[in-house]
Length: 204
Image 1 (cartoon, helix red, strand yellow):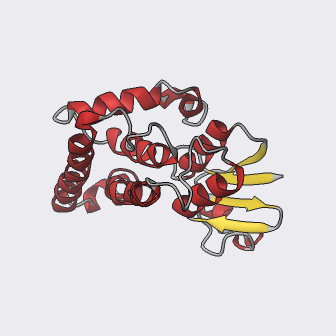
Image 2 (cartoon, helix red, strand yellow):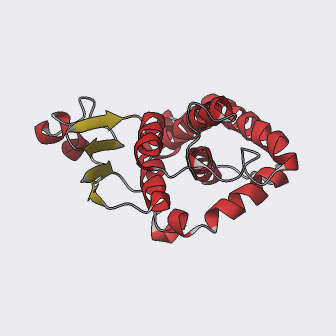
């Protein structure tokens, strides 16, 4: 049985969304975003940094959302969401799986500035810089999606799950109205039942 350790709204949303897309059975361990919970000895014995996502499957423990996506697709996918080693889109699929983190890292910086750092200690310079970097990362997606509905020409894949979460995160802090193609893409992703089952209801 697969077990996913998850904090709602965090990067583990990628793994939860993908599990729903795959339609396989799993156990969800929902955790609070609380250092006392995440740094508890019991959880540190599973994930040495006390972060999410962390997936355990038949004694195999995997962390990092990109690695989890590759693992799940290679082990459980029927060809819809993954692109195997012999597939002509394999390397493009891998590129977008990991580009998702390029987008998300700037959103995560804005989370830190907006939520976890006291207001008097927040840096307008960092907020401006990270906002601009996030916009540039989404601009790349906007240009890439001009002639297609999803990241790969063959259609929806796990790469869209990973990138889609990154847009979801950034959309909470910035307006992406300047990138209408990327926003139309995001609208398609938000309509998917698996996405709606994975994000916190008040934000879904």
